[in-house]
Length: 187
Image 1 (cartoon, helix red, strand yellow):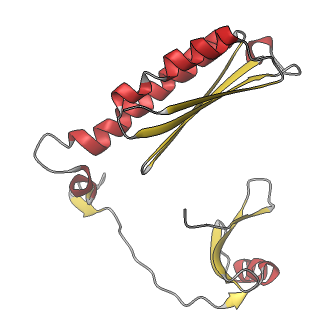
Image 2 (cartoon, one colour; image 1 turned 60 degrees about the vertical axis):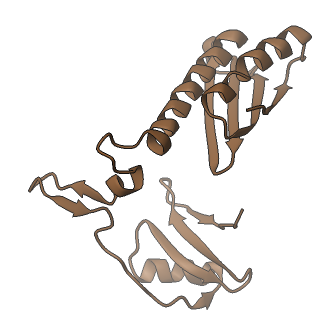
């Protein structure tokens, strides 16, 4: 049930009072979910924030076995930002516990319940994955992938095997019209 709490600050001095306050409150997360291994809290002072209400930023990251949760909040006071971010994290932990531990109430696990969803039009149960598609990946570089994406008129994304890195990548179009590249790694 014990976990590490790592408190870091940016653009502000770390005092014992801040460290004790944050550590004591963040340690309570382990009581709710025993698989938590590390809690990282990053407190930042943003001198050039647009609004005075956004001067302090608190970011909490919780890691554990098959678990990664993150909450962030800005406020005009350091304690207010941290407390609100901690409340958000509490809600995420409760939601996580509900999905993974409590089940559906009818004896089915969350995975079994997620296999089917209701169709809004007919009201009937339909499979969660409505369509499966298989295709052959050909080695290409990033520029060739952009050309292929345009030729195939794939507006949102394109999956390809990157010949330069020998890995599967996902090319996607961003809102501003530029492209982004996702390079997944096994962790």
